[in-house]
Amino acid sequence: MKISNVAVIGAGMMGKMIGFVLAAHYPVGICDVKYVDVSAEIREDTRELSEQGIFTKEEIEDRIARIQFTTDMRSSCISDADLVVEAVFEDMELKQRTFAQLEKICGESCIFCTNSSVMSPSEISIDLEHRERFVGTHFWNPAHLIPLVEVIKSDATCEETAQTVMDMLESVGKKPVLCKKDVPGFIANRLQHALWREAFYMVENGIADAKTVDDACKYGPGLRWPAMGPMENSDLVGIDLTYNIHKYLLGTLADNHEPSYLLQDMLSRGEVGMKSGKGWQRWTPEQAAVSKANLRSYLVDRFDRTDNNKNDM
Image (tube, rainbow, N blue to C red; front, side):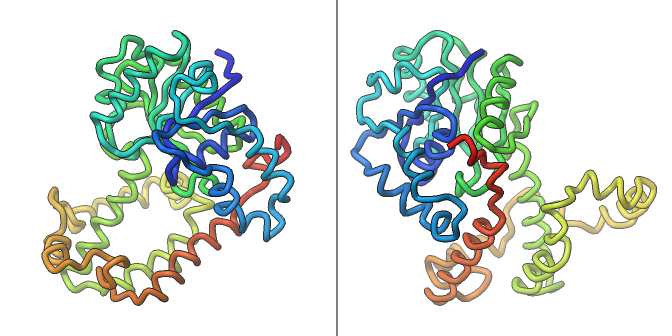
C-alpha cells in the first residue's frame, strides 16, 4: 500500500508536532476546529534544535512548507490523504465521531490511525465499516524528540495495515514497535506504570523517600535503559540468574490492583504535583521550570539526526 499524502486531525500539542515529523517525507494536511498558527508554534517548539545546530532554520522551513492547515475537514489536503492520524482530545465519543466523519470523506483505502495513549483502538473503531484499515499509533510527547511510536493492532486490524504504518513511520525516522494485542497501556505505559507502582509502594512503606527513589532510577538502571532493555539485560546476566532472583524477590514486590492510598491522600489535599507546588515533593515554580527544562535539554542532546531522517528534509 503506497502512502503519498498524510493528514493529522487536531493541531494541539501533539498534533502539530506529529505533522512536523510526517513532513520529513510527505505533504501534510492538519485540520482543527479552530484556527491555529501551526507554523509559528512549530518554529517555537523546534527553536532549540536550530539553536544547537541540529537543524538549520532552512531545513525547518522546508518541513513547514510541506504543511497545509485547514479548519475544513473536507478540504482536499484531508480528503485526499492516504493515511490520517487523529490527535484530538482523549474523549471516546469525540474520537468515534471524528472517524465516522473521516470514513465518509476519505477514500476507501485510506488508513486511519489514533494517537490515543490509553484508549482502545478496538473500541474507537467499533462502528467503522472498514475496521481492517484502523490502527493505533501512540506517539510519545514531545513527538518530534522521542523516537518511539507504538503501533497497536485492534481486534480487526489487518497485517497489511500494520506493516504499512510501521514502514511509513520508519521512513520519517521514528522507531515503531508493534503491539500485537489491544491491551490497556499498550507496551511502554504498562512497563512504566509497573515501575511507578513499585516506586509508590516503597514510599508508602517507608523503604525510601520520593527523591531517593528517583535518584536510584536516574543514577542506576536508568542509565542503562537507553542501551539495553529488560529482555536483553536478562539474557546478559543469564536466564538462570534471572530465574533465581525472581524466585526470591517477586513475592515481596507490590501487587496492589488499586492506586496507592497516598495518591488519594494527596488528591484530597489538592496536592497534584508541580502545578500546585506539592506532590511527592515540594516544587517552587523555579524548580518545576528547571525540571522541565532539564528533560527537554536531555532529549534535544540525544536527538539523532540520522534516525530522524534529516537528510530527507
